[in-house]
Amino acid sequence: MSYARLPGPAKARIVRMTVDGQPISAREGDTVATALLASGRLQVRRSAVSGTPRAPYCQMGVCFECLVAIDGVADRQACLVPVHDGMIVTTDRDER
Amino acid sequence: MTERGRDLVIVGAGPAGLSAAISARALGLDTLILDEQPSAGGQIYRNVQRVAERRPADLAFLGDDYARGGALVRKAVDIERRQGATVWHIGPMSGAEGRQVVWSEQGRARRVKTRAVLLATGAMERPVPIPGWTLPGVTTVGALQTVLKQAAVYPEGRVVLAGSGPLLMLLAAQYAGAGVQVDAILDTAPPGTMGKALPRLPLAALGAWRTILKGLKLRNAYGRGAREVWTGVTDIRAEGEDALQRVRFTDSSGRVREIEAATLALHEGVIPNAQLARLVGARHLWDDRQRCFRPVLDAFGASDAQGVFVAGDGGGILGAVSAELSGRVAAVAIAHALGIIVESERDLRTAADLDRLTGQRWLRLFLDAMFPPPDWIGRMADDATVCRCEEVRAADLRRVAPHAQGPNQLKAYTRAGMGPCQGRMCGNTVTEVLAEARGSTPGAVGYYRIRPPVKPVTIEELAALAD
Ligand code: FES
Image 1 (cartoon, rainbow over the protein chains, first blue to last red):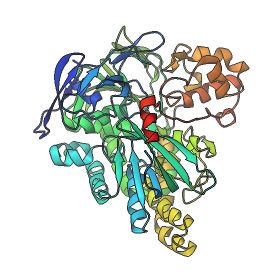
Image 2 (cartoon, chains in turn yellow, blue):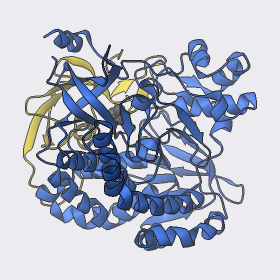
Image 3 (tube, rainbow over the protein chains, first blue to last red):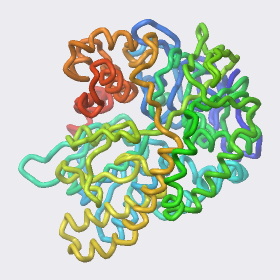
Image 4 (tube, rainbow over the protein chains, first blue to last red):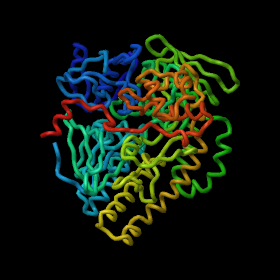
């Protein structure tokens, strides 16, 4: 796992969601991208042309490397979407 | 869905957009703020309200300048604002003054007619196209700061920060304060920048002495949290199979070195986030000192596109303090343009802010000399990917460069800029590579033509426009 959450008395509510069929817990205030990082998921997709692994890059809506399916809608920018309870995220799809 | 018409639509809820909105309200303008991010504050004050409420202890390492943003967000709290609203078109209105702004929000497209538009879209980090930068594990300094503010998330395992600029130093200091280990800092600033910057110091100090003092303190302290600091670094490469494993670089003595890393964060300064200013056809010029394009604006932020103003870093990189100032100035100028106040009142209301902006420009001259933008991007390694979406390498661009009139033809030949990011990540690089290959200048080479929609839109989203 290559990302972690700082210790400290964060008063954020726990948000429960599903990523690729696995339950994960995130925190209210997370974006989908930070929730994925904090749950140990770095790669979210493969590139469209050669299929090389890709991960969120800019975290601010510019690069489009973080595209995942969220609640059945494909190609959403994970770094711009806040998490909610019951959210279903699917990564690693052939995007585009 | 079409909304009720407005006097002013502001795109972006960072320091420029928020301060403009506060001024616009005071002047009686019916204003709507559209912002793509989950919460207000822009990148600089990202998530500041929630951090202050839920994890106030983190303000200690995120710093006073960040914490202060909370006041601005609070002051603008009752101005109509939509978060998660991605603007993808700003059109002229047929047969009328004003503009039509179209955006998507929660999966539905919406539009509004407005008498004026203020683009406060801020900055993005300059894409740093080194070989291997598409590997998972390679990210940017700004992105690491973003996840720290957004979610108190930080990289574990070996972390390398590479590049140059105030933001890199700030993150290193914030990590030191938060107890996050940085294994190495690879400083790419060429030797002698301090000497070149010094002649600019007196005026800069006159304009913003507090910032200078803070900056010098930061410069002395930023390396302390890191295990190794290398200066004068060049030729950085990211290597690994399915994810980053090593960073290779040349040190100041010309020796090639290799360090293990799970995370490599790149940073070579920031450039205007100018997609929307391009879309409305505002004239842009190449800024040689900052090595980027910026829209041509008058003293009050008016672009030459009818009804469109620009404030903040989107109009040229000047920083957060300037963004607040230029936001206020633009709001007053818009009130004048709409006939709400007379010229003498506009001048009276903007004089002090314009004065302070001059001081901030002096500061920027110093900072630009201290952290010069990279001059190697046009000469980057052949095997480096320029367009991440369509996987176009520098070599591919150079092969067709002699036959391409400009970036748009290059795009047609190579597909560079045709992927989902629509050229945001490769535009600057393509211009630099083309200029270098053709023995021309970036200004003469130009930039991609930007067409709507500037972000991908689905049929389902579009259907909502018919409601
Ligand atoms: S990480 Fe760049 S757009 Fe989401």
